[in-house]
Image 1 (cartoon, one colour):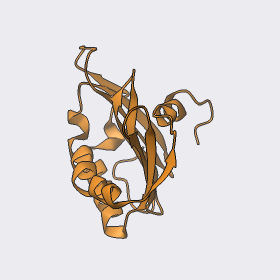
Image 2 (cartoon, helix red, strand yellow):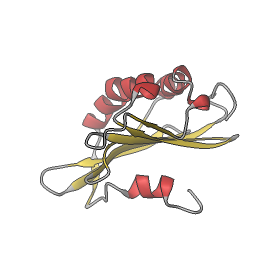
Image 3 (cartoon, one colour):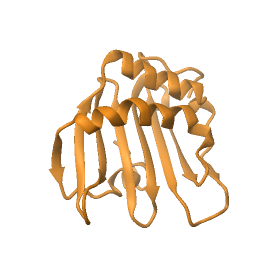
Length: 150
């Protein structure tokens, strides 16, 4: 990816955190501002909330990605401890696609995760829950297992 993602080059991003055993809470945001999050509900039920980011929020997300230098992110970061939280990110722009696994090491995405926690998650809390029975591995499988990523 070239340095500096813009609203003109941005296509979508998927940001996730969770567990390789239990699944991931994942947020997927498209260039239109349309977005969704998959997360656990009570018991074994998982939910999908859809929402829309306004232009200034989308610009804030792109700013956080640029502050984290997403164009230079490596394919994997790990503390070499295998009993903690994992995550991943996938970014697609008009110039290409990049993705990264994170294992107990989220420092490369400090700004992005802060933006998600302070801006996106409050919007999700107000969003309508639209689906039941969501597989929390769906986004991970889409990013890392698909031969033709969508």
